Amino acid sequence: MLNKSNLIDKIRLPFRKEKELFSAIYDITGFYPRRIDFYKLALMHKSATKRNEKGRPLNNERLEFLGDAVLDAVVGDIVYRHFEGKREGFLTNTRSKLVQRDTLNRLAQEMGLINLIRSNGHSTSHNSYMGGNAFEALVGAMYLDRGYDACMMFMKKRILKQLINIDKVAYKEVNFKSKLLEWTQKNRVRMEFRQVMQSKDDTGSPIFEYMAVIEGIEGNKGKGYSKKESQQLASKETLQRLRREPQFIDAIFAAKTERTKMEEEPVQVVPDFEQQQDFIIQHHEQEVVSMTEEQPQKEEPLLSDDEFSLEDIKAVPVEKTREEIIAEAEAAAFAEIENQ
Image (cartoon, rainbow, N blue to C red; front, side):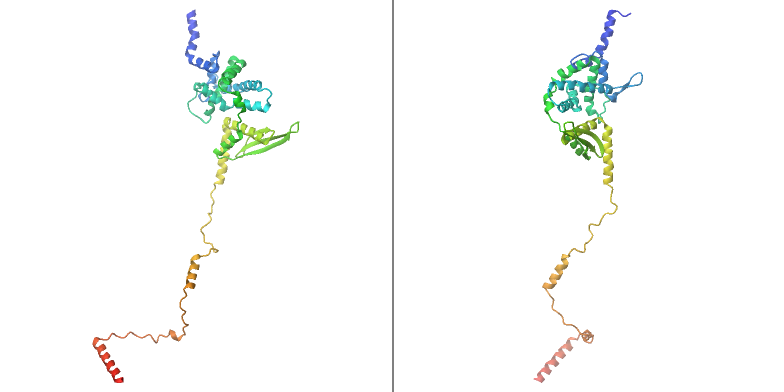
């Protein structure tokens, strides 16, 4: 049988072992946990999944699902009360900015939540939003541990009062279409906006619905009172899908690979672009002709058949001696004198 001292030790032992975690949860949320196991599970990334006695995986994905729903309700409540008289579209856009993965991921980093996550230590293509996912799981754990009011107090006093200016977030315009185009251009994939439907509401105002199509793969749709608004919403939903569905990205790049493969098929016969063309004027021939015309050669008389005779061609006489030359010269001189 346990005495009072042993009972106190049994109660304090778990607290001492998990003192750092209790303290960290208090720093983040503003209160101490009642059920620490909920928060442990919220910080368990699926890469470090453990299994319970029944063999079921233990990670934060289910709490993430619950926290996502609770966040939408809590933030929707806050936005509705804060912006009195604003239209539904404005309220929806503001809530979306507050609960989007980029915002939650930055909050997780600022609050130090990212340092408490248990994972296998290997970075993956989806780990960039691991903090945001853990933030949603933390809200899910708070909801199970302390209820809706605790989640509302956490968002009002800890988040919107200390970390986020709700008015700046609401009036800061995010160009989702530009962001989606930037992503497609960076990854060299083709994108278009395809009109799905055009109708009118009860007051006769036109309603447009567009779909983002990337490499022929259908993305998400957006509906609005203008083409710009509907394409913005389609871009926003498609961006969120790209972040949450890796198989969607895989399908896009598979389609891109198939398209580029077809475009890069080699041509069997390469045309001979160096082949000489008959219609090109040869300038060097002109120069030769010009030179001939400018410097005409002396015209030779036509030759008759007789002038081709070989009769005038005689054998070369044998070279004479010196004495014979002198004798012939003297004879020629005497003959000249006699003729005078």
